[in-house]
Image 1 (tube, rainbow, N blue to C red):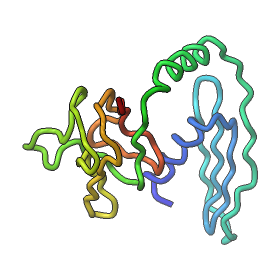
Image 2: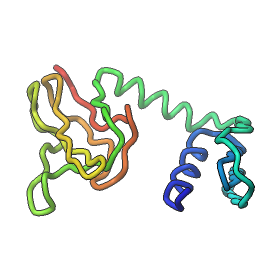
Image 3: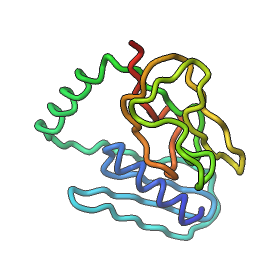
Image 4: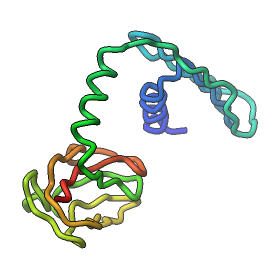
Length: 158
């Protein structure tokens, strides 16, 4: 397992709200513990074993104020449609560093308009709009990794 994969797993565990995840693979035992202020990771070399997740205990936290803010945002943004990533890769707003962005906030788009590219395994995949409308918000920063089904843009279809 590479360092980058471990770092991505740590980020995933932190976002998921799990307090502890243990993973055993061929030569590695991996334990990720997320506390209120930090995440700790322990990696141990071990004898070969098939990959299995041993434990994933959900963290119990009660934070009501941010949840209310998120609910307010979701109610305001519920009239907008999300354009989601169809693949895992690196999100780019521009076709190349010296070119302008495909779309900006406020731009009108039509069905089939190219919104961005996502690089996956050295291939640049153009992501096209499947609806017409106006770009309201870009939800991902340029040159950052995106996951499958991660929201990329908010579109006002009216």
